[in-house]
Length: 250
Image (cartoon, rainbow, N blue to C red):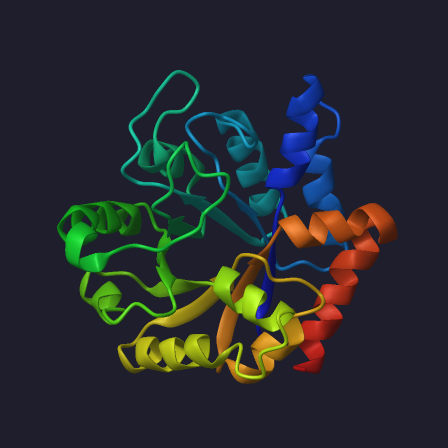
């Protein structure tokens, strides 16, 4: 069954807008786990716009105590700066179950494209090896239309995470084949021995269709839509509704 990892970045955005510790990121994560979420995702950025290094370490301890997956996303090429030690040193400290590598920069509001393996492969290779030495499963963020998806396996990655922003746009526009490109990408990746994760702009409205069309998705990471929906319906209820969609398989 597909597993749900809740991205709690948006909780940190709200906290940081006023300073202090409210709302509490760890408490929010605990609420998600109590509702049945299978894991927690964070995406610490060098500019510390939301999740910070201290959050990562506290959430690492929480997920370890509850024996659930912790997934740290980030750009492995971003250099350290005050308050941000760099993705690999942070993973070395936190030892997440999964590290998801994403080629994002400070100027991006959110992750909006995957790796170019032709350009970035040589630089990724030793970083993936180092993360695996830390005991992390490694997933690479990719565009569904990337013709070189199988290269991720050659670089040592265990999984890919399909960037589902274009899928969400196509679904919202009413395109009946909205998931076709993602489904084809998943099959190519699986043929190369890679597992499939997915994330970005997935919501209660479009998740069921995606999972029905894309074969054997192992994990979805959902944050923005889930936290937004939780403002109306409550965090536990919203997580439970996502789990219901996943369990129904439609």
